[in-house]
Length: 139
Length: 139
DNA sequence: CTCAGAATGATAACGATTCTCATACGCAAG
DNA sequence: CTTGCGTATGAGAATCGTTATCATTCTGAG
Ligand SMILES: [Zn+2]
Ligand SMILES: [Zn+2]
Ligand SMILES: [Zn+2]
Ligand SMILES: [Zn+2]
Image 1 (spheres, chains in turn green, brown, yellow, orange):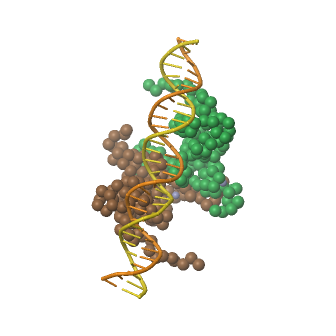
Image 2 (image 1 turned 180 degrees about the horizontal axis):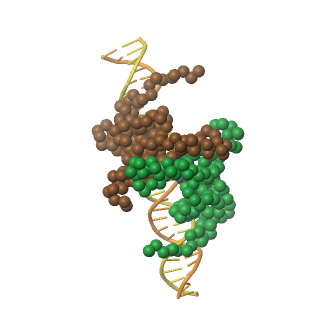
């Protein structure tokens, strides 16, 4: 049966720790390239391939969330909540909040059931201008 | 002032018509490359750049819907409904249904208002295995 | 200390999309 | 039916995010 497997989940290498740390101190969705640049600038250079590798691993293990930005780029975020949730993201500055939506979960469930779809997942994201950015200037 | 402008909205060229026709006879989300291949095979070859151009135009004018597949590719669909709606998509065969969710719209609205976000848009997609595909074999 | 296996990262390879720009077309005036 | 011109087309180059290679470096057990 599925035994607990490897007890270590979080990065053990300097590089892995750096990638996670960069995300942790951010609160916004960041791209891989973005993080790579930050680490390089911050004196703890990490190879681009390694950044991608760790982001992918962290995402697979559910440590971080991912979504596709409007331009197709994949962006990553370290969320406070471990539970299933969604996000509202500022399309100007990238700030984002975690939000829950029980009614959305129910709706997705029942729509799927009604149409005979199984093995469901969903993406639900809200994009807009955060209070700060919309105060600054519309566009 | 903003006068009604050009009265023609739909493609006037053979190529434009071909792109739209390909989507119309499909009911599924298709990629640009996909459509390009179909048209080429169907004896009405259209340049790849032109396919992209028309898909982009049709999307801008709201004639077709777009979404990002899991692999990042942008896919397009010609929907029956002209009203705002969402989709449930089979991740195996690409079949999709248009679905509405008033409660989801309300939820998005109110979450945005509560957090001070303006100029909202949202993406809400459900992925799963359609009845046919899930009968065929879980995988 | 030694060695096998895992991790790293410079670089090449990929693949989707966009850009360039010379050519083909569509259409209206003459 | 020609001519002229602005628009559309499309082959191929250019972008750019992401992934694959693979030689080198690191780590940890014995
Ligand atoms: Zn903002
Ligand atoms: Zn959800
Ligand atoms: Zn299916
Ligand atoms: Zn909606």
